[in-house]
Picture 1: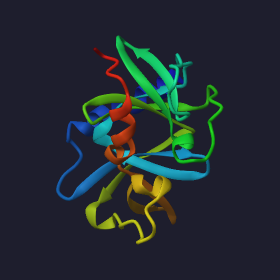
Picture 2 (picture 1 turned 135 degrees about the horizontal axis):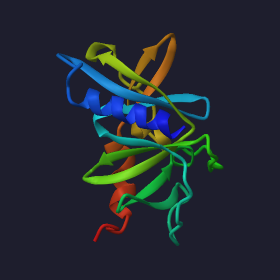
Picture 3 (picture 1 turned 30 degrees about the vertical axis):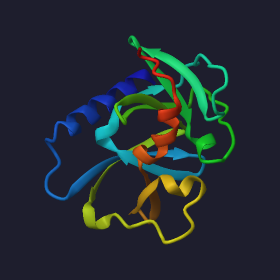
Length: 172
């Protein structure tokens, strides 16, 4: 299993070097949370790793599972299922943590599984329908269609704007 994540992380690093992206094309990492498919910009992804137990911190929101030490960097781990109001994830070995850089911080996203690397033309990204922006919809930045399924693009900046700002500076 570790080899699979190392391979995906290596593939991401190669793609981030810009070797295969040109023009109005974006790349995303897609993943599952429950039965839904989401994606984030590949440029934010630093690493993909299997679930490991975290150290909990007192008085934190339910969606902040705790922290882990990733080669000397203390990384807060967020449960996206809980962040989206779908209940807590009971994490097992089959769950995955996507390590991302957002708002000058490194955080981990607990997801059910990583699905694919998507290469998408800019005109294929559809806007979020005009609806009330409450709950988790405020974190969505667009929708793409992949094999007749819809994949919701997440804005990491919107997702962690308040959550990261509320965290103590753990690196200090």
